[in-house]
Image (tube, rainbow, N blue to C red; front, side):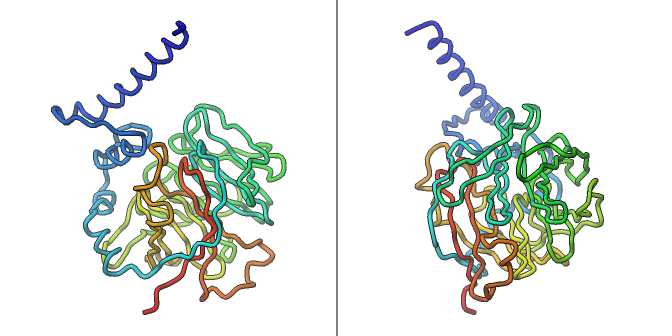
Amino acid sequence: MTVVNSLKHVRMIFAAFSFYFLLVLPNAGILILCGPSKSHAVAEEMNISPNGEAHAATSDQEKGRKQGKFRKRRREFLNGQYELIKVIPHDSTAFTQGLTLHHGKLYESTGMYGESQVRQLDRSNGNVIQSYDLPSKYFGEGMAYLPPTDTLVQLTWKRRMGFVYNTSTFDLLESFEYETTTNEGWGITYDTKKDVLYVSDGSSTLHVWESKYPFKEIKTMTVSDEEIGPISQINELEYIPQTNTILANVWYKNAILEIDPLDGNVMNIYDLTELYPPRNRSMNADCLNGISVVTDDDKKDTFDADDGIEVYVTGKLWPNMYHIKLVKDDE
């Protein structure tokens, strides 16, 4: 074994045990051996953010963590399922934070420090057509397409910085600062009917912003379910013009919420557990995250929403993207 390879092994072992101590020392005497996906799940229970940083839980976050109530809502009141239309390959090294579509072009925002990118994907085979690397100090988050300016707007996680890009060249056009309830950026989507942006920040709050630079805040609302109460850790967002609703991922939940943009009330919960079952996932595969409409902007009113909502979905470090139809159960 060469000296270089020996050093690589030492670094890998050190990294593994560094994360081990992060998880174990607060609970001395408990041995936890797990891969990245499982360690994220443990981190969630210990109130540790996805990159290993401890954070204080707000009252909304505590309500959102009541796992039993969420499972009860899914078991007894769940009223949405899905139909699988097509499986599309996806880069399993992409830590997907957002998907958005514009005139048949599918864009993806990925995260992790030193790995965050803006990408254009070939939606027929998942290949990366072009990409732009964010500076290593930024952890990329959600991204939305803005028709009025024909641009892409992207959030970052901790830096309270957002970026506006040219859709064709990915040239950086503008940067802007923002504040949220957690001072983090998670998901973002554009409402084509009201000409506003909806932004999530990992809490139960949705921020409503003006769609024009520098994206001033208009108001906030709370995402809430009649059975669960406020639901925190709202992640990736996608506005659906056919139904005038917002679809949302929830961090580490295998479900998609359908939200009323007027008041934040949860209208439906779609169960995607069996799309890529946790029991079948590789050790590297992380949680469900990433939603995009399938139809082009100029065809957005050509199907009956009562027949279902067609979307692309994927997850962080998932090997596939899925074209699915979200359908409501018969009542």
